[in-house]
Figure 1 (tube, rainbow, N blue to C red):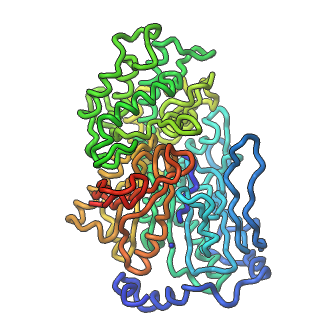
Figure 2 (figure 1 turned 45 degrees about the horizontal axis):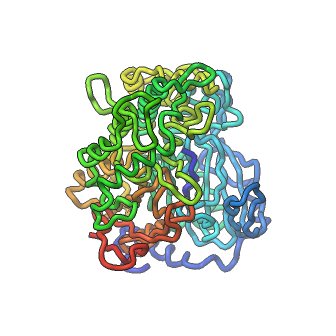
Figure 3 (figure 1 turned 30 degrees about the horizontal axis):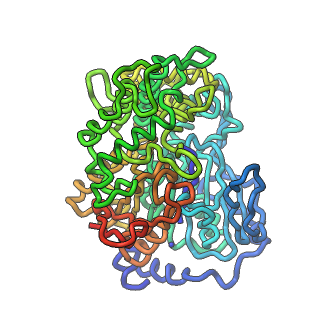
Length: 598
């Protein structure tokens, strides 16, 4: 779940937004960079800055000259992504609340900040990803806009390790980089506790460096960072003006149980097929080949592709793509028996189809109670491209097929976080792949669900207490003029788009059907976890958030483009504000102009 997602941005409208005359004047004054940019001496002087938390210390405050974009030298024909250019800026690294924690570990909340010389008067808090534990690059990179950064646009940016350090807090006998799950305060900080101290430290640095406060503060994050963005507006509404929330893990304790569920479903298939590793455990990644996944994708497309008015490899009317529609098409490609020897390239074993349906239905307790969420049937489970079959769905749900050892993220990341962070008390599980696989494939689903609700440690918190960000009353945030845009890939294999839609619906019910005044949602058909898949996954959505918050211009349809890793590089489509969806109309089928949002 590692995604660095700082996304890519006044008059009567500002006054109506509720920020007040003084704030409006400040916003108008920040439309252009300050005439007198801070100097290198001003940067060095930050070493003497004062902070709201007296425990804060800086280990670095250095002025960096502007750099050009770099293209890394790599093997192979396809180059790696470019390293974005950086403007002249003051780079700061600091920490606060250092302490001795559980099992002899030393913890601290560390942060990384970049303060551009040509500042636009605004501040971006960059969310983390996965298990966090690293400082982040504090550039505000956009997952949907490769090479574009908030820093280059003039934003001051802060990132943080959320209160634990992967290099320091790393015990191989206790889940490795997820060792922090054994410390109650470190778990709390990972969930949300670090956000307040870091945003306040960032604002103190801005005040000291520029001699004025930021006009607007944005939180932007995806995956675990999306959960943090939701926590920001729910727990610290006074600190933020708007949030861009991407594919959020706001029910992470439950989503981690879904990963155990997935592993057990596909692991049972691998075991029945005789696909075992050298450790004797099922190779979950061998449950379905890439060709098997393409067969399943074909059945899903046959059932639902034309629901939006055209057959183009995308299911834009995804809410109509129900299990009832898909199952008959899966039946047509199901082999007569479960005998792997008799399986052909044109059919799926009945147990493969059953496992796929079990995974897509989501985890349940033994008595049938849903634990997390079902998943949308969509084309992004795998697609053929010029570069091979897309891997963004299977790498999470089972792992890359060719690997001789279990390599799926559901085991490598899901198993350690579930056993250390998302259950109470945490268990001691070694960080090697065999131990993690054994835990995931043998875990009792009902017991894991129960353990997610057990209060534990000095803070007497359950994982659902410090991790789940599902509050529906957001009035303390939006009454200050706060705005939220959420987006989520329909084929996200980590966090279900349907769970996000349920939360949005609950917020709307709380607001008596008026939530669109402060929150908008965009589903991205075919997109996997933050990017990738048969999708138009390149788009600028942060600018829409900025225009909405600062100028009162409500977001409308957004044009998105397919990247080179998609089946149709350069294709454009509309992303519609939910519950609208793109209806096909006459026109060039590869162009967004051939659709209209209704």
